Length: 289
Image 1: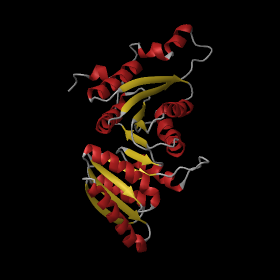
Image 2: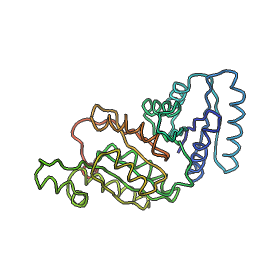
Image 3: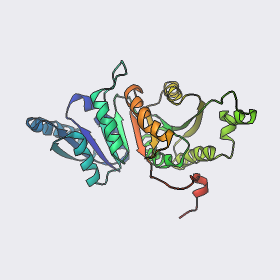
């Protein structure tokens, strides 16, 4: 795996550096430490900070190079990511106790929106990555996220939970429809959602990653927050796709922004490929060349 680690060369990038090193060492990845400064006079101290970080990575046996640039951070990061074939982009974040949107988190959000690459935002430190929560809308676009996370989880010896939130049934729905929304009933059904959730678990298991499926009923952001706290997860993963679909826009927009700012966890956003036509389950697509 090839990782692009973006840093300002300041202390608030430290959490991202530490988590990147943990992943890179376990997965034997190649790392480019990319520093951008908007002030030309800061280039020399930035380069020195990058060299110090490079030495830390090399001391742990990680293959690493450093690159420094002077310019607008978001455009320079986007340009670098497009020019090279990276599998993961790691950036710092900043979490405020009041839940306010910080300047750095706004930049992180814009980077997520611009890049089609997986972006890992690290606003806080975690002692390690032991438990991973993969938030799925139930569509096939989560496949790319599961493939990436399965490799990371295997290398780190972590477990994974495939998580979905289903809406509570309105009062006017039929008894049959209400029963279909019960998590236990849903997971044992032959619906496309159930098949995709089970396929995600199977993919993780095929990589020797301990995996389970959890489903909650209720409001999406409320239930994600509750699950994060209840499971004490170390990494939260969102799959997304570029679309005008209401759920997707909600997930990529407000949900991503909120998670980066109040989840108090590293958040990995993985954009899926754009597909057309009817969505097929992974099980339906097995055997398709």
